[in-house]
Amino acid sequence: MTDLRALIREIPDFPKAGIVFKDITPLLLDPTALRAAVLELAEFARPLDVDLVIAAEARGFILGGALARELGAGFVPARKPGRLPSETVTVEYILEYGIDALEVHADALAHGARVLVHDDLLATGGTARGVCDLVSGLGAEIAGCAFLVELSFLRGRARLDPYPVHAVLEYDS
Image (cartoon, rainbow, N blue to C red; front, side):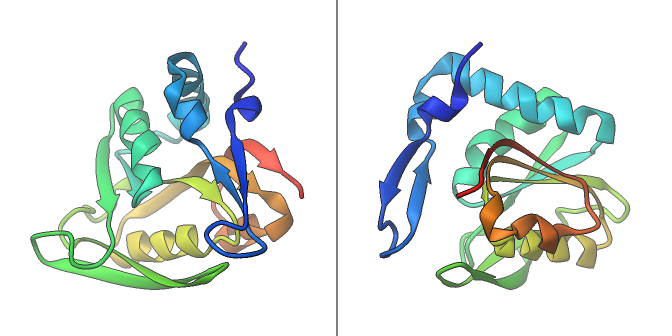
């Protein structure tokens, strides 16, 4: 069994002072760990019977696409503004260190589609909540939210209530 936690590198004071960035790059470099992470996310998501996985730019894309493939689901990229070529819908949200926004194509989420929201990391829940609001605002149903890493001490999970939430790795400080 691969120790995924051992492959998460901590970078102090990035992207700004006081934040300890969880760098998943070493995990991504290890094919066994990468597969194990995707399979654990899929184990949570498979019973949810999702039609689509939506993931936030940019690190969410890495596992989000692989997870969609593993589940036999479609993939919806939630991108930074101005990067999608067709009509878009935008959501702004608050991060632990600022304000950001994501967009999806207006026709990407079929009314009633069951959607899994994915990102690499759950911190304060701002990004994931924003994606959830975008998904539900377009008439799709949120089946659950799945993350590789959760910083539970920031209580982001509470912002995702009432949706089922799963994280492969949890950090409580």
